[in-house]
Image (cartoon, rainbow, N blue to C red):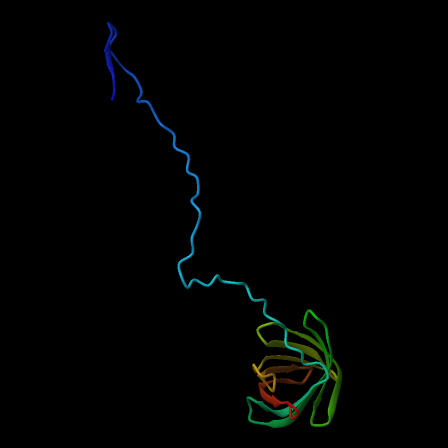
Length: 151
């Protein structure tokens, strides 16, 4: 649809006429049997006032009895607990739990810093994880499995 006009200086070409279209959205009709996806907010499991007891094993093969008593938990998952390893008590352990049942705890057992990372089972009866204990003359790593006898 181009028009070409001849002039003395040369050819002059005019632009094509353009049509602009506007798109209006059509109403969406869901297929039969379609279930709309709804967002489900994951909840943080409640483990306050529960005590988990089990065995902790170091990479060197030594084992001990470990007990963690959770004293409080906030809505956001902040935890306060006490930890006992073969009778030695760490009264102030803090940490958190998230909606994916992952735990992170840290504190001091005397002059030894203790860090525990773990996963809480879906039924909240078992905690399994790893630990690191670091002090002036201590550097111990290992794993642990704890169960709540009441669950």
